[in-house]
Image (cartoon, rainbow, N blue to C red; front, top):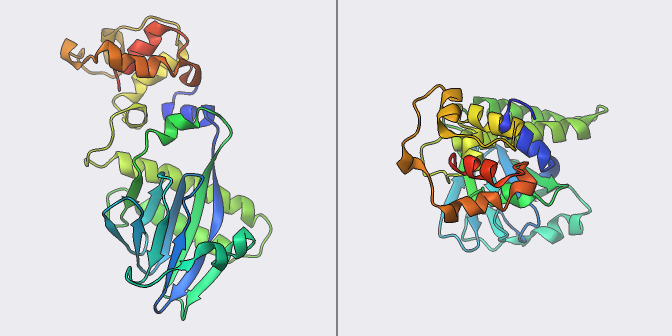
Length: 268
């Protein structure tokens, strides 16, 4: 196991990001996508639009450089005006045979989409750790790299040189990681769990220790020492019931003993 818990876990559950295409739009337009069968995320390379997701009351306003992730299996609409009747995405993209389309008149907006593919049953570990949607604004802290990645993705999308497919997927992978980092760095009610701990520089050393020796009966003082902090108080420990949720995932995370699973749970 590497010293980077997030990379190790993403590798363990075999996460891969695939660039899936996009569309340009101008004037008055709207498009409705069916519920995605995979975790989907997209970037607004230029322009602005509104996004609504079935089952959620929010109206999301996305601007140039914003990134949006949808883990909920819900239909969603992207539009210049949410009051407009939307076109069916299946028709626009010719039942999936086309990867790029144009809506309306002009080129006010460029939308670039990707999705996550999983080759492991452990993918639920990641999906269940994500909120239904993540909207990361271009103006938020730590999004400078995302803007650069979006610009590079635009170049590769319009390029005809060899290797563009590999380049697009590689850039999409980096965009997804930056999206996770940006989301988890915000103080806005991020769900507590292994994903938050793996991206927390204070807790990551402890997770690395447990993954390197999962059969060991770890104790809080030595884990706290690895994090270069004082031992955690007893009140920070969770109940046996909450420990069960982590122990039941031992086969996915590599915690092969109940003791190591309980130790991991103390950092959830």
